[in-house]
Length: 162
Image (tube, rainbow, N blue to C red; front, side, top):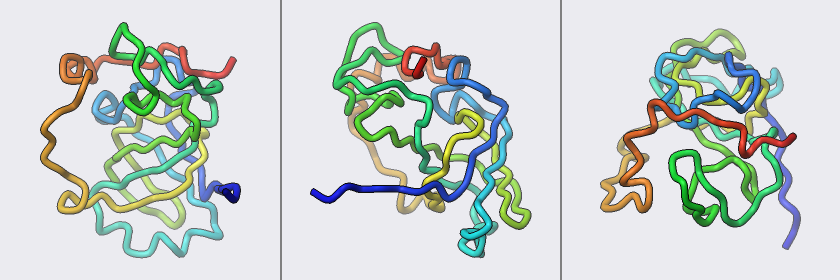
């Protein structure tokens, strides 16, 4: 198979300077403000983005350590397969977050509910549309018993490169 290569289209800025202490999901980062700096050559692609209240940011977990196919997630004491958890150390270290868009000025997006480390390379932006993105879910696997921990769970550094 041909190699897949992505290039950053911008940089995400937040108050979190390292993985440790960063909220692990946007739900645990309510009200945390940040910005997305879209590189000038891609800024034309921001046309009409101000009409959306929420965005899906797709980014590269640039500070994560080499992946293992099983790991102990932040909200459980047992190991699970990497594809059954949302840990940053993955075969393709790609993250997604749904954030609130609060403003746009030229190539800067002002956002809230940021659970992303400062300086993270941005790969893509998509508008969040509930009619496209919300699904009725029957089961959330092992997380069913732990999902209540999301608002207080923080990264403890276990997946960060050293």
